[in-house]
Image (tube, rainbow, N blue to C red):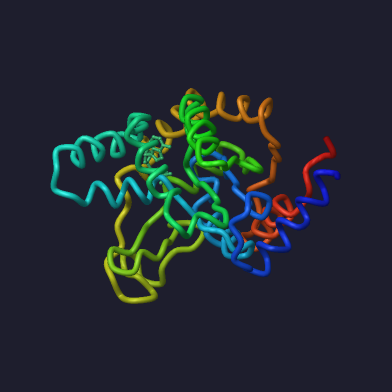
Length: 245
Ligand code: AMP
């Protein structure tokens, strides 16, 4: 039987949200793309469209740094500098999340893996539990667009709504339209840190794309467009069956 037919059955299950944890009915996706490509926004939307769980390594790490421990302070220092948190710790946190029941029917990984060693370790750990990455999607966005997006981002301290100084400014500067909360810039969203994050991406994460191009089914999707257009393109990329093998 062709890969196309089993893929269609996988997605039918997914789209109807029928609980089923047999290997053939699960879609596990890695969403790649540089910081600022919109992975976070898109991964959440597309995960609900295809009824799988959105897992973002950055969110998991931000939860961790709220703790009052030496490890949390160490992790925060890496994040504030725009550098990668060490592989071993990040892998442990992500694998713990992927072993939770809501990931059994499939997941979209966002922000992980960011190094080839994370990608290899992820494949090995998943194989150990009879799972695998079914599809890798690469969101492609030009660098000048990325810098503009990253350095203008403002977030609400209370409801976490996201604004952009140029593309989606709040009505009153510094105040959230939705709840009146105070807006702030994440320490890793300034222009200097944004540049650093893109350099780190090129150095450590581009090789991950090369790894996936040779070992997995990798699809490029343009991330330069409206939020709705990009969600639709991503949904289509997940729904398109892999080439016959
Ligand atoms: P993000 O929210 O994905 O932009 O991640 C914010 C920060 O968390 C990154 O700049 C890194 O410091 C850290 N981080 C997130 N994911 C990873 C990962 N897979 N490996 C190492 N560090 C990570």
